[in-house]
Image (cartoon, rainbow, N blue to C red):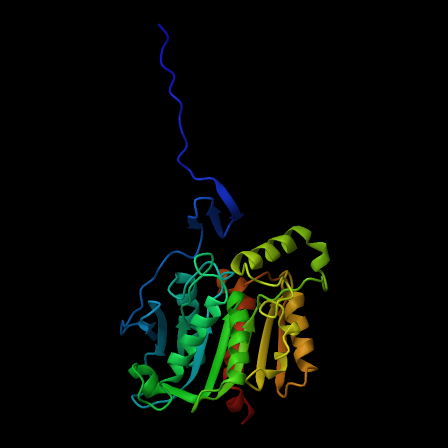
Length: 327
């Protein structure tokens, strides 16, 4: 008699798209995020210098934001307000991950600001423009506190709505720009956006600029990621990813902009391109760009205590307190 033959059948679904080390999409529609999935809770521990808590800003979409407040804030003290949008290629990370929680905690402590870190729905479950629409809803929720009668007491009591800053890194930098454009066209009563900070912003384009032509595989990866996050896009010159092509580009709704880039980052030249074109667009304001030598994309999140990260932190803090620095 013949012995039976047992064959091992793999239960691993077949891969459709592999964006390692970020995420993998399988042909059955399932998504495996390879990073940015850990969650750290907020804290009101009296022994730490920055308190944090999570607040729902959209019941309909079940979306929350994480608020940060320096512990020693006086009961009626008003602080500059930072609204932050996290990065992750529109596909990974949240405001509640250790990476962003730790970064915002440090930034709030050093800058002495109150901050709102906005969550938004991500691709591929929710393609662009949902991330923009969610972020705008988050910004509108923040603005609903401008008269001191919103649903969140921290914002009612401590946010200075005459000194609001928008900031974000990578995809969050892209979102930050889009929020500034929308705000420029549809301002909130009682809210003045004083400036925005674009940290290694995720901008792109069909034609290569600078050193991009030397990085064919990386270019293909960036283009594929954009088309994946936004399947209905007109391409890499879509104004959502190449803001220079936007007829409303000059309508950035603030008068101060800080662009931060890394010398070794593939997106470096796009940051410079943004800087140069906004200066000559007819937009009336002050824009500054700072390049970190020998550093790659979002290095400050990976190496928060290195010298260049600390220098970047000081640049951002100084940007928030520009009026004080001038006195």
